Image 1 (cartoon, helix red, strand yellow):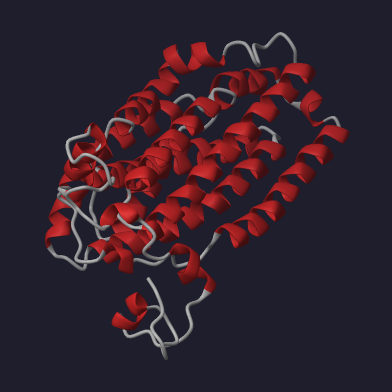
Image 2 (cartoon, helix red, strand yellow):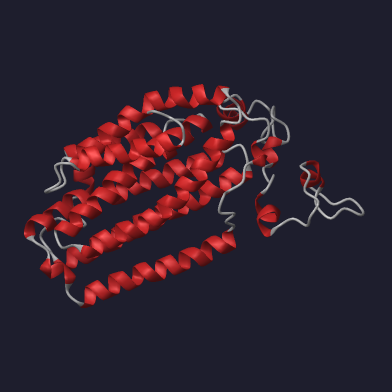
Length: 329
């Protein structure tokens, strides 16, 4: 993109009917992928190197197509500067929660049964959030437009943020409630406990959904909504019943990030559906992935103490999000 003499904007934007000066968002977000310049050679090296084959197959030849993916816009118009300002405030809020509840001796008031549930169902959550971070990392590397990549980069950063916060909280519990396996048994729970096997199967399969469109659908339309509704929302409800206000408020803070992820996901789905054939493509993928999401929700929520309706409520919530996008799955 470049200016010509007398122009007030880039030629790319002028072709779109934009005559004003580019916004900060447009300057640092729009049409930045050099690998879209030549579809046959996404990376400007030998056309036969594996990376070029990979991008031609899983990006350029994806069943999910659009005339101009670069025309997509993040509804929040976030850039690196504004994202960091926003999340600095969020981090300060979470730091305040952790410090306040530590000072009042919150952990000592938790019941033995609930502490055991935290060891089994909360502390291993860092593995779950790490899979979200890894899947987002793959998606951002194969997204067909830089405006999509930017959205996924911030989603990736949010997931890593919550990996760290769960690890921090686990360390606190290891000190305050020693002997419960905090910092010791998380991997065993993640790999073997029935409560986690639905999410484990779902996320391991998401991580090998190589087509960029299927990666997006499986992660943002199935896996993340399942995590939002079960691991965050229903776990927060159980925590409130057990007097664990700290966990509930941490989950609420994580859901603030999730609501932003849902906004750009909805915007991208609407953008993709400008082509009628994409509804069938995305619907076919949802038919494949949604049952895995439902299975993950059920296995996790059945383990939540005192929550007999959690699985139904969480499943209904995940399906409602997809219904808002125009899909039945």
